Amino acid sequence: MTVDEFNNIIYEKDDETGIVTVTINRPEIRNALTLLVLLELYWAVDTVENDESVNAMILTGAKPLESDDPAGEAFSSGGYFNLADFESLDEKTKSEIDLTDIAQK
Image (cartoon, rainbow, N blue to C red; front, side, top):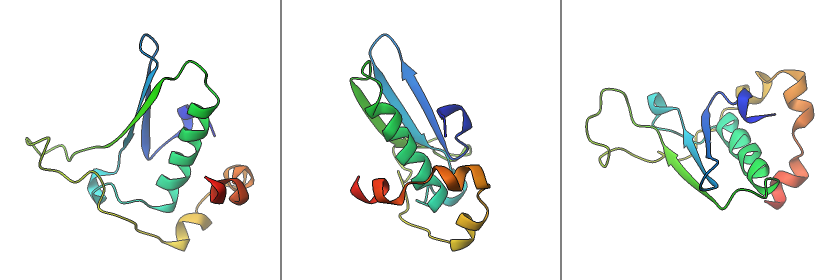
């Protein structure tokens, strides 16, 4: 999976500084770590590891649109695991999942 295909996180790279910002973009569920979020985070870290121009990665969470307080929101509410998430993946995405590699990271 490429960064352009992410649906649950936002991957932004500043080419001048080499800093990547990854934002968990599921404020409607307080950025809970679902299977799909975790898979996209895994692929984002893999992208960073394979890009020698990256100097650092910042991980953050999106705040609800109605919130005016950037410090008063949760980064992530924790894990939310639903096996139906895996079933909803298309076959191409399922074939790209290397559980051995994920477990090692």
